Length: 422
Image 1 (cartoon, rainbow, N blue to C red):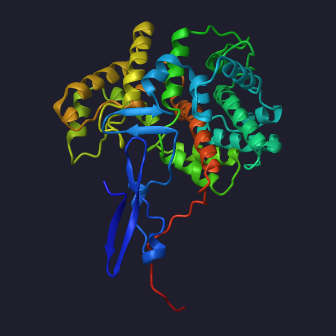
Image 2: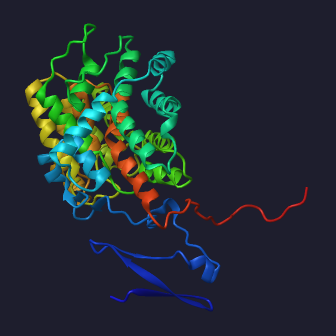
Image 3: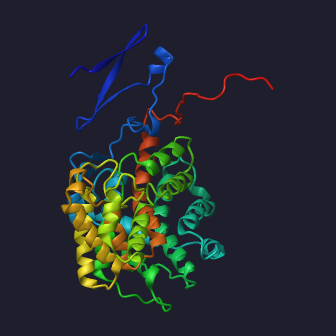
């Protein structure tokens, strides 16, 4: 294939370089288009616009492929825990035993919150949405670590990324316990990352909690599959805000705000709410399946299909097994689980869903697993943020390391009034 494409517009004929990625992805470099022709491209939602060249995550929606730093998501979930995968994204390589041990120790040591942060959480109305609290807390955290807010100081960035990864589980647990009017539980230096999170979430008033290995394994999987997903809405937001040389705390706060949307990170919460709606209506799955098939009906089955994947979402395939293990082990008498299993069967067998590749996605299974573990639906998106955090940081770092970094500033086609007089 030629290494340039030719574009003819009126009297202009220009050559656009063809950029080829390592997996043979191809794009046209239009960075000089406006200077040469006076024109810009129009791409609503940026669905055909490559905003950067990235070495972090490879995604092929047609083939159902997801890789972090070249490693298949299936292999990572089989051989790594969340800390391993986090270091892979942040540093580009899997950690050595020494690197893993050092990072674990440093993160666990940083899990404690300043007293003022605990007071801040207690000041929120208990009925406030956890994502609103999380956004406020992450931004406020920077005020307690003002020696970590220079985005151009590598040592400050290193400390701030470690602090964020360490404290997000603690913030999440404190927010949860505040909503229930329960005392906060301090992190335990003898426990691992996920074990600490579950203990801080669910310990009794004496701080006691029996750690379930299957819960730990399932949550590790969920955090890993949510680590990164290329240039999605929240990741792009982190990069856009970071391009202004905003500090890491501010950039991550912006990413959390983007994730909150029901069309993005809020989808798993919307999925469980849908299951609750069906349950409240007598659990008639067939009725709602027919409603979803009816083009004239506004009802939509949440948790099925994906904007990028036109094949089975590899993340869903991975966590489905964990979902099955938990449901069988717990033997919960919960109508939502029965409805979820019935919907799953329909999606995998019904010709309407199969022909349209409307497979159960990661939001469908993650919501079911969170519920089985005992995490309330309002916290689902907060757990998503916990998993996505290292991916956001990796992209923020990559942006600042790029020799071609520029502040993000899209153009527009103005469609308002012409010049008017008052």
